Structure formats: structure tokens, C-alpha cells
Amino acid sequence: MQGYNCIIVFSNDGKKLLFCKRSKAPYEGLYNLVGGKIEYGENGYEAAYRELEEETGINQSNIQLSHIMDFTYYNQDCYVEIYAGYLNSEIVLREEAHPLVWLDQNEDFFDSGKFAGEGNIGHMVEQVKCYGLGIPQNQENQKLVNKIDIDSICIGVDGCKGGWITAILNHGKLFLEKYNSLNEIVTIYKDFDEFLIDMVIGLAGTNEQIRPDVYARKIISERSSTIFPAPCRQAIYAETVSKSYDENVRVLGKKFTPLTVAIMPKMREVDKFLQENTQYKNIIKESHPEVCFARLNGSTVLSKKSDFNGIEERIHILSKYIKDLNLNKIIMTSKNFKCNIDDIIDAICLAVTANLVIQKKYDVIPESPMRDDTGLIMQMVIPK
Image 1 (cartoon, rainbow, N blue to C red):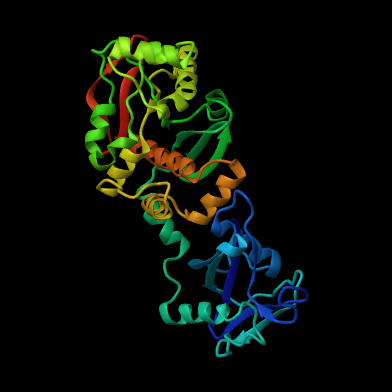
Image 2: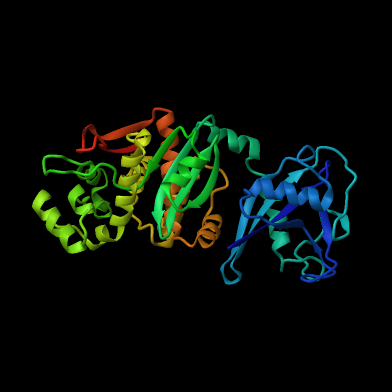
């Protein structure tokens, strides 16, 4: 889903608004707000300030923008972010593609014969007049700074088809990437401070070795089915699925679900990486997004993350820690990465949790975890 922005610029005395007169379709000959396309990798404010300077010459030293609302057009596969601000002084404008003009604030901005947007501009302006600009960017950021450590590199990883979705909170700023292997991630981010992954770490070799799964299910009892029993080490490395079942029954006395079978290659990949790169043993740690969401939310998130409402609910939880996080951007990223939306949400959740680990705001389950036969600690790291 492609993102765009529109920027409402008030003159420094607040009496006029800045418009461009469209010289080409769409809306040729009509007045429109300045703005443009949000480029891949940009956050909303970065794109708004860039477009504003490109089209008008107004830069960040001349105006403080506030993000006031969004429009989502599902039938056109795009969304529009709306920003507004007042100039702090008079400025000489620099035109780009369209002529610029100041119009009186009392114009009828709902007039679709004069203004682009089928009346939307009138709605935007009225929102600002009635309710103000809201929280400016610097105050909004400060609220989040209080929740996020900005002096660290924290990584959250979730498996996806063809690789690993990786969320990086790099000194407070979120980056989303897709990598083919764990080795790629640690090569690029070799100086990471905390690294959590939604994958089994530590494989029981006997039924006396207890993994954290059973403790995690108690935390989210209403959604305990999202945490399935991990197979034993012997099953992970069996030559066939049939032999894996047999080994698991022999060692742990039970079979495992088809869902487990589907991700066993990922389990094996993680275990092999840690066995071959011992410097990351018990440095890269296991976590579980649904347990983390429950702790971040204060209670189990009952909605399914495969549902639209469930996705929005989880994004709302994460937006308390990360600025400019919204569904449209995550949808756009999932299309670029050819992955599921929930893969991205889960990776971000683990990056946030990793950041909380830096701040000592975390728990380990169980409190006294066991080690498997290779020395890996069988634990889950979750928010406090």
C-alpha cells in the first residue's frame, strides 16, 4: 500500500494557507495542498519535511509539523497522512512543479470546483481550526523516548517464508529488513546489544529437561494454543518426518502437531547456527510474541493476529513505544518482503521487548531455566 502526504501550511500570522495550483492531472487547474509520495524506508515526518522543502523551499527550521490525521483508500491501495503547522516567520517560497499561492483562511475549502480532494481539504482545515494541531513531533518523540532506550541496538526476529523478518531498534529508530540467514543479520549488526527470536532455542534430550513452553501457556491461558510443544533434539535431526515422530515419542512420550513439522527446518537452522557460532550461545535468546504482547498490554490479547482487528490492536500496543507505526506502512512492507503482516508485527514486538531487556524491564521464564545437552539455556525472555 503506497503512502502519500498532504501538508497544511499556515502563514506565521495564521491568516493564510499555502496552496499549489495544479498544472496537470489529477485536479488540473484546482488548488491543492502541497505534498507527495512517502518513499520506502522513510517515516512520516521525514517524508513530510522532505516534500515540503522540495515543493516550497520551507525547511524544518521554518515550521514545526504535527501529524493530525490519515485517510486510507483500500480501493486504490494507498493512504494519505495529513500534517499541519504554522510558519515561524515570513519566508520567500521556491516553486517546484506547480505555482504556489497563499489563500485566506476563510475561503470555502469545501468548494470542489476550486479545490482538489472532493471536499477533503475543507474537512482537514476544519479539524485544525476546531481541535488544533495536536502533539508536535518533538513532544510526541519525548513521550516515546521515556519508554525506549535510545543508546542501543535491539533486534527482534521472526521466521517467514524464504528467510527472517528482522526489526531493528537502532538508537530508538525502527528499521525493518528481510534476511536469508541469521549469519547475515549478525554480520550486518555485529554490535547489537540484545537479540530476541521467535524460535525454539534449547532442545530437550530427555523428558526430565523442561522447556519454558508450559510456563508461557499459563501466562496466556486463553491463547495457549499459540504455543505448541517443542520437539526433542533427536526429532529435529531425524532424517524423515516419520522418524521424527518416532523419536519424539521415544524421548518425550508424545507426538507433535503438523504446525511443528512446518517450522522444524527453522528450528534446525537456528540450532545449527548456535552450535557452529558458539559466541552467540545464550546471547541470542528465545521469546514469544503473544506472551510479550500480553505483558505489554497488561492482559492477554484475545483477538487473533490473522484478523484485521487483531492486527490493529497489536499495532496500537506497539505504537506506545514506536513513533509513526501504522497498519498502512506495515502492509506496504509486507508486500515488499512478500511475507505475512503478522511476521512483521511479531518481529517489532520482539525488538521492543529486547529494548526493555536493556532497561532491565524483563522477566525470564522459568525463573530458574534448565540447559539442554549442548549448554543452551531453555528460557523465554518477556517484558516484566
